[in-house]
Length: 141
Image (cartoon, rainbow, N blue to C red):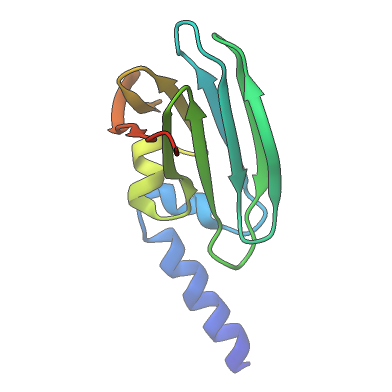
Protein backbone atom coordinates (compact mmCIF):
# COMPACT_ATOMS: atom_id res chain seq x y z
CA UNK A 1 0.00 0.00 0.00
CA UNK A 2 2.82 2.39 0.84
CA UNK A 3 4.40 1.97 -2.63
CA UNK A 4 1.08 2.85 -4.27
CA UNK A 5 0.83 6.01 -2.19
CA UNK A 6 4.33 7.11 -3.19
CA UNK A 7 3.56 6.47 -6.86
CA UNK A 8 0.32 8.45 -6.61
CA UNK A 9 2.16 11.37 -5.03
CA UNK A 10 4.80 11.31 -7.78
CA UNK A 11 2.14 11.35 -10.51
CA UNK A 12 0.25 14.19 -8.81
CA UNK A 13 3.52 16.10 -8.48
CA UNK A 14 4.14 15.81 -12.22
CA UNK A 15 0.59 16.92 -13.03
CA UNK A 16 1.00 20.01 -10.86
CA UNK A 17 4.17 21.11 -12.69
CA UNK A 18 4.50 23.18 -15.88
CA UNK A 19 3.12 21.52 -18.99
CA UNK A 20 6.67 20.91 -20.29
CA UNK A 21 7.18 18.42 -17.45
CA UNK A 22 5.15 15.92 -19.43
CA UNK A 23 8.19 15.75 -21.74
CA UNK A 24 10.27 14.06 -19.04
CA UNK A 25 8.03 10.99 -18.63
CA UNK A 26 9.95 7.84 -19.59
CA UNK A 27 9.41 6.74 -23.16
CA UNK A 28 8.58 10.20 -24.53
CA UNK A 29 10.03 10.64 -28.02
CA UNK A 30 12.39 13.60 -28.54
CA UNK A 31 14.21 14.88 -31.63
CA UNK A 32 17.36 16.85 -32.42
CA UNK A 33 17.70 18.34 -35.90
CA UNK A 34 20.96 19.71 -37.29
CA UNK A 35 20.84 22.21 -40.15
CA UNK A 36 23.85 23.42 -42.13
CA UNK A 37 23.21 27.09 -42.91
CA UNK A 38 26.86 27.76 -43.77
CA UNK A 39 26.88 29.37 -47.19
CA UNK A 40 29.65 27.38 -48.89
CA UNK A 41 31.10 25.07 -46.27
CA UNK A 42 30.53 21.45 -45.35
CA UNK A 43 29.62 20.96 -41.68
CA UNK A 44 31.21 18.04 -39.85
CA UNK A 45 29.62 16.99 -36.57
CA UNK A 46 29.55 14.35 -33.87
CA UNK A 47 26.68 13.85 -31.39
CA UNK A 48 26.57 11.49 -28.42
CA UNK A 49 24.78 10.73 -25.16
CA UNK A 50 25.94 8.67 -22.22
CA UNK A 51 24.57 5.54 -23.94
CA UNK A 52 24.74 6.29 -27.67
CA UNK A 53 27.35 7.61 -30.08
CA UNK A 54 26.08 8.61 -33.52
CA UNK A 55 29.58 8.80 -35.01
CA UNK A 56 31.20 11.40 -37.23
CA UNK A 57 28.88 12.82 -39.89
CA UNK A 58 28.87 15.58 -42.52
CA UNK A 59 26.28 17.87 -44.07
CA UNK A 60 26.60 19.85 -47.28
CA UNK A 61 25.35 23.46 -47.30
CA UNK A 62 21.56 23.62 -46.78
CA UNK A 63 21.57 20.00 -45.63
CA UNK A 64 19.59 18.74 -42.62
CA UNK A 65 19.73 15.64 -40.47
CA UNK A 66 17.53 14.62 -37.55
CA UNK A 67 17.70 11.88 -34.96
CA UNK A 68 15.09 10.76 -32.48
CA UNK A 69 15.31 8.97 -29.17
CA UNK A 70 13.21 8.04 -26.17
CA UNK A 71 14.22 9.18 -22.73
CA UNK A 72 14.46 6.77 -19.82
CA UNK A 73 14.38 7.21 -16.05
CA UNK A 74 17.90 8.59 -16.16
CA UNK A 75 18.47 12.19 -17.15
CA UNK A 76 18.89 12.18 -20.93
CA UNK A 77 21.20 14.65 -22.60
CA UNK A 78 23.04 14.86 -25.90
CA UNK A 79 26.27 16.75 -26.61
CA UNK A 80 27.45 17.71 -30.10
CA UNK A 81 30.66 18.99 -31.65
CA UNK A 82 30.52 20.97 -34.91
CA UNK A 83 33.49 21.76 -37.20
CA UNK A 84 34.00 23.66 -40.41
CA UNK A 85 37.10 25.26 -41.97
CA UNK A 86 39.21 26.36 -38.94
CA UNK A 87 36.29 26.66 -36.51
CA UNK A 88 34.69 24.39 -33.93
CA UNK A 89 32.00 24.42 -31.25
CA UNK A 90 30.96 22.05 -28.46
CA UNK A 91 27.50 22.34 -26.91
CA UNK A 92 24.61 20.58 -25.18
CA UNK A 93 22.15 19.81 -27.98
CA UNK A 94 19.45 18.33 -25.74
CA UNK A 95 18.65 18.14 -22.05
CA UNK A 96 15.51 17.12 -20.15
CA UNK A 97 15.77 20.24 -18.00
CA UNK A 98 12.50 22.26 -18.13
CA UNK A 99 14.33 25.49 -19.00
CA UNK A 100 16.14 23.76 -21.86
CA UNK A 101 12.93 22.23 -23.23
CA UNK A 102 11.24 25.62 -23.02
CA UNK A 103 14.05 27.21 -25.08
CA UNK A 104 13.56 24.55 -27.77
CA UNK A 105 9.80 24.78 -27.60
CA UNK A 106 9.16 21.19 -26.56
CA UNK A 107 10.33 17.80 -27.74
CA UNK A 108 12.16 19.12 -30.86
CA UNK A 109 15.48 20.97 -30.66
CA UNK A 110 16.63 22.43 -33.98
CA UNK A 111 20.25 23.62 -34.25
CA UNK A 112 21.82 25.51 -37.14
CA UNK A 113 25.47 26.06 -37.96
CA UNK A 114 25.90 29.58 -39.37
CA UNK A 115 28.90 31.79 -40.00
CA UNK A 116 28.01 33.90 -36.93
CA UNK A 117 27.70 30.89 -34.58
CA UNK A 118 25.44 28.06 -33.47
CA UNK A 119 21.76 29.01 -33.36
CA UNK A 120 18.79 27.33 -31.69
CA UNK A 121 15.31 27.63 -33.20
CA UNK A 122 12.53 28.41 -30.72
CA UNK A 123 9.46 26.63 -32.04
CA UNK A 124 7.11 28.59 -29.77
CA UNK A 125 8.55 31.97 -30.82
CA UNK A 126 9.30 30.96 -34.44
CA UNK A 127 12.73 32.58 -34.21
CA UNK A 128 16.45 31.66 -34.30
CA UNK A 129 18.67 32.63 -31.35
CA UNK A 130 22.46 32.51 -31.38
CA UNK A 131 23.50 30.28 -28.49
CA UNK A 132 27.29 30.29 -28.89
CA UNK A 133 30.07 31.43 -31.15
CA UNK A 134 32.75 29.48 -32.95
CA UNK A 135 36.19 28.79 -31.51
CA UNK A 136 38.95 29.44 -34.01
CA UNK A 137 41.32 26.49 -34.26
CA UNK A 138 44.93 27.59 -34.66
CA UNK A 139 47.03 25.60 -37.13
CA UNK A 140 49.60 23.29 -35.56
CA UNK A 141 53.12 23.74 -36.95
